[in-house]
Image (cartoon, rainbow, N blue to C red; front, side):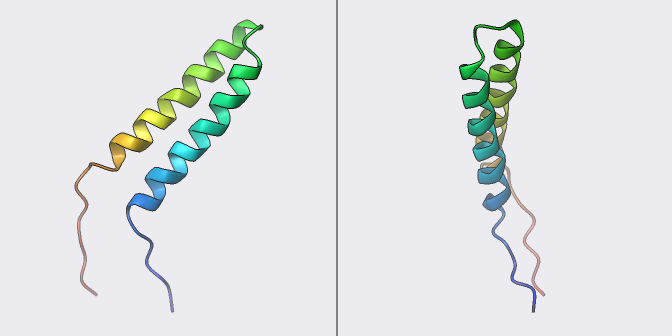
Amino acid sequence: MKIPKEPTTTSWAVSGLGIAVSALGASMLSKKVGAGILGFGLAHVVLGQLDRYRPTVKRHW
């Protein structure tokens, strides 16, 4: 039997990955590429949180 996941699980996973990438970018800020990695991670955090408020289609099986 397959357990259905909550729609917000993906949103939290994207945000969590963004936090990890942001931490990596923040540790590399002395290099030019560090700022890009930091911005990439912060964008994932923002997009993951915005995804939480998107309406979902509810299916009844």
